[in-house]
Amino acid sequence: MRRLRNVKIVATLGPSSSDYATIRALFEAGADVFRLNMSHGDQDEQRARHALIRQVEADTGRPIAILADLQGPKLRVGQFASGAADLEEGEPFRFDLDPTPGEGHRVCLPHPEIFAALTPGARLLVNDGKIRLKVLDCGPDFADCIITTGGTISDRKGVNVPDVVLPLAALSQKDRSDLEFACEMGVDWLALSFVQRPEDVIEARALAHGRAAILAKIEKPAAVDAFADILAVSDGVMVARGDLGVECPVHTVPPVQKRLVRAARAAGKPVIVATQMLESMIESPMPTRAEVSDVATAIYEGADAVMLSAESAAGRYPVEAVATMNSVAISVESDPTFREVIEASRRADRRTVADAIVAAAREIAETTDIKAICCYTQTGGTVSLVARERPRVPIIALSPVEQTLHKLCLTWGVHAVRCEEVERFTMAVVNAASAAREFGFTEAHDLIVVTAGVPFNVQGTTNILRVAPCDERLILSADPG
Image (cartoon, rainbow, N blue to C red; front, side):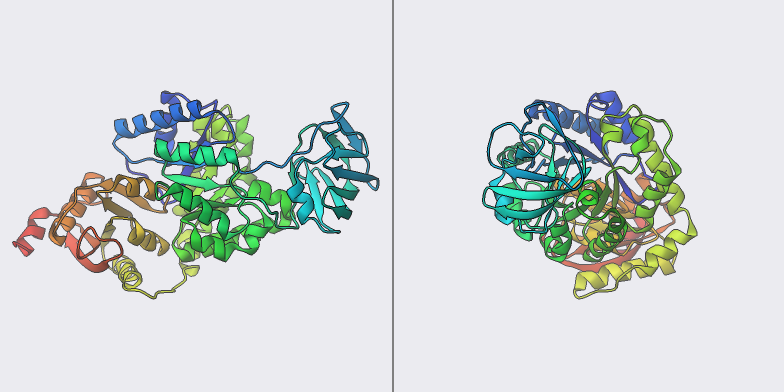
């Protein structure tokens, strides 16, 4: 199945999308990557979903990426004697380590790490920021606060602490168990929650042992501040606008999104824009105009992927939500302004032979009648560099490594195709020409650009580029040896 767009669609699976027929319908509607949210459902449920995705992959003959999204540590208040309490603006309130059920003036916050990091003036946000408090005084086992935004606080509501870096690892014991489970199952990407520093990503990478690529979710102010260092040690990033919009002033999220997308693009690493993109489609078969504009904005910015969460996992219209995203993407990418915006934001930071090769491939494709750029690759590194260029023609990634093909399903503009290992560049060109015709990108009389590295099957050796016809007879006759 050939996609008619470049941006990829990530669809989260859940109660509304856990059977074969729905998952296949989601794929046929446009989903390229399926997300398993480890915050919901047990490992048996996720294993069943994983198996169904791989069955759809086998039945359709197209690579599909699977992303396991780790929950991260959850910070929550304790319980109240009456189940809830009403907090009034301007009144004092205390958080402490006392497990006694809470009242209208205090509650247990069973996280000593929070008290260790707090300073006067720091904010505490409860229930997705609906209740806000400011710390007046604090110690190792308490925080005396003033309520700045009141409301009803109830048992086990979540707490955000946006103004300090918490001495908490991004991986809880549950996350470590889920990470190992996901890697053994064979997921392609691991999304890491609660990232505050690059060391969080490094720890997850060490536990994954190369079995999955690591994607850092940017959802905390500390992660925004340390983004350059986090990006450097990650394989990709997600602009997770849910918690980001709670912990940061909501009006700052759009410029943060634009900045992070542009930086990830410049680094040649995939970036997902996520959260509430088509939120109304949880209940409605039609999105709002503002939601359509939100999806379109992420595509105009050059994001590699846009993501559906509850819309496809628990909503009433999961397939319609994917189809809507697909239609918006096709419309945006057909707009001449899209190319103007993408090309104006291209950053030329080229330091290696591979950088020069992919830049030349794009230039040749855009100044002559080239139909596709084909990359023979082991790890996908060169393909990511080609995608960074955001060329006007399709990118065909050919690899004998199944894990590489799966990983590249998240990368902008890439059509992943499995091929056999080759020993000669000529055969790589033949495979590229055959794939370009088979999937409808070219006819026999068309031309393609092919990149590869010699010697073959060695990582990081991209050093050759060829303009070739899509007729194997012409390719072989030009190189009979």
